Length: 115
Image (cartoon, rainbow, N blue to C red; front, side, top):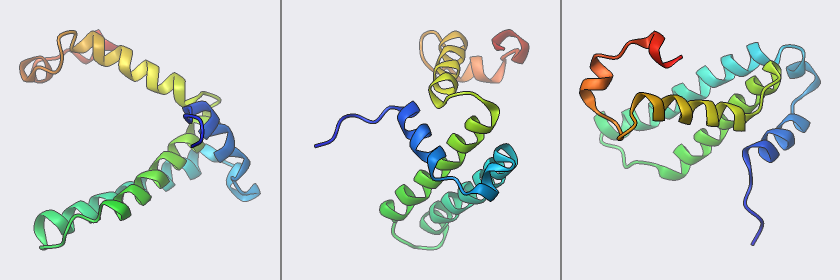
């Protein structure tokens, strides 16, 4: 069994696999790739919810991996780490919902207060 994979190790290994063409503008390539792969995730769930398909968890896992890839590429293009983004997001959400998610806090939140 291999060691636990950290976000930063994943990002480093993913970066090494980016093509020379992809490295020309990793932010643009990353966000466009993210949009496409997220759409593929949505399509899998749409087929499950509205078209009578079984939920294809393996296919969804595959597409989620592609989403992670493009998030890592975008982070690399911005010069930030996945771990920085993950920690920033958790800090923001803990500040917004200190006792866990509350619908009323979501509905009545002041966006500027949490940035």
